[in-house]
Amino acid sequence: VATFEEYLSVRGDSLVRLAWLIAGDRHRGDDLAQEVFARAYVRWRRISTTAQPDLYLRQMLINANRSWWRRRSSHELPTDVSVELPHPAHFDTDTVERDAMWRLMAQLSRKQREVIVLRYYEDLDDNTIATLLDCSAATVRTHARRALALLRSRISDPSAIMPRSQS
Amino acid sequence: MNDLDERITDVLRAHADGPVDTVALSARAVERGRTLQRRRRVGYAATSVGVVALAAMTAVVASRPSTQDSASHPRPSLPALPVAVGVPGLDKAPSQVGADAGTVHFSVDALTAGARTATWTVSPGLEQVQLIGGAVPSAHIAVARKQSTFTNMPLNVDGPNGAPASVGDRVMINGQVAVVRSGASTVPGTRYWQILWQPVRGVWARVDTHAPNLKAALGVANALQSGNARRCVIPYRLTSLPTGLTKTGCSVTLNRTGPGPHLFSDLTVSDGTGKSIELSVQRDDHKPTPHPNGTVDGHRFAWRADIEPTLEMHGFHGLVVFLTEQPHGFSEPSATKLIRGMHVVPDLEHPATW
Image (cartoon, rainbow over all chains, first blue to last red; front, top):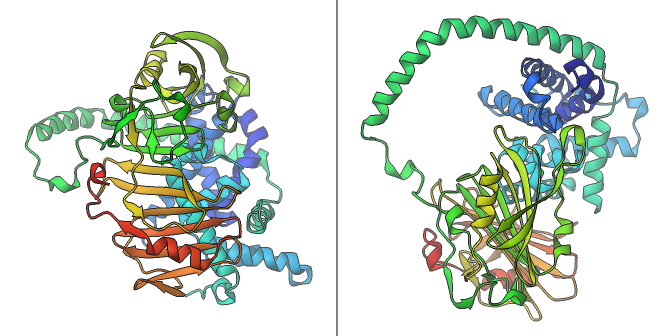
């Protein structure tokens, strides 16, 4: 059985990247990962005996993200997306398109974003996503369908992808 | 993978790119984890007296009659799919499994009654039900005419550290030999079990379940009843299908809690050449249709044909409707024709009347 430090040295990298994506920005993703890893350290003896600590840690990340949303008085969209913009000198068509799509994805609901990230980045099937999100596979499909419909509908609407004014 | 899928994958990979300092990460996590451990030890000592008092108080409160509105309570049992009168189960008609989108040729009444959610699905050659809650945290029971049908359903069983799980334990299910595999589970207090057997000649069955032990997992498999058929019901009828289309798939999710038993349902109609329309409905969310650009029978809908043709319509007789066509080939007129022929049942509360 790997120690907690050994496990993080191998798998910590991919879990942090997942945290970045479900949180919507790197700073909050880092905080999320940090908090979850600390709690995982406390429970490591039990987690390490499960066959899939990766799944367990993913579930902890998702739950921690939900708790963060619940603590917010309103479901504000991440406002610091702009900190991840590349330097203007590095702009090219691909970068601009990616940035536009990223802004659209920031407008998805938390559940829709989780499903999209788990399906397209983690490449998980609907049943596994359903287990992680504690819902049915049909619910996963509905969130995915609605997220894709939203993205499709806004791809051709430039006003939908402008940064929100920061009040 | 279509263009939108590729763009999503691309942007996610791009935003997940960059260096991660795992050494610093690990050090900070250990430091914070130790702080949490210290707090927890102090907390346990301080709250142990309070827990005893709280348990006693809970017992007293629980013994009093509830004053809450009964509508907020779960229904006593999950509604069952209605019996398909005169239709044989898979024991008498194994060749009919997955042949009729409107019929499920098995039942699992012992499990469904206590479940929180049940999703019944019929597709060509395959019938399945996914249960959440009840006797076990989750159970998936599938029957198919060919064992190879299950090859598209991933085997999720892994042993410790990704090694293969135990394979090949043989047990008996209703007099038939079954093969059991098991592995660790992410659900606390359970293991992940897969059971494969032939309940009758010509039909394969597979159970995937999170269960505390083999006995509970076998309880799921033994609940499969092959002697009667049920109707895969959805809360609407289609009275006019575009020419050449037939119903090829049905899926309905019933829920024990919430305002009504119907959560989602999907009906798939196909033309036999790979073109299909999926008509999905869910409980009304009381929101207006976003960006409407058309009307059918007085109901506003949004039709988008850019990548995957989709029609979305909210507030349709208590339902939200999504209609998706795959691949390109059908058109807005065929979609609206389908909607015009869609008659929502008057009683959304009782699946037996659908």
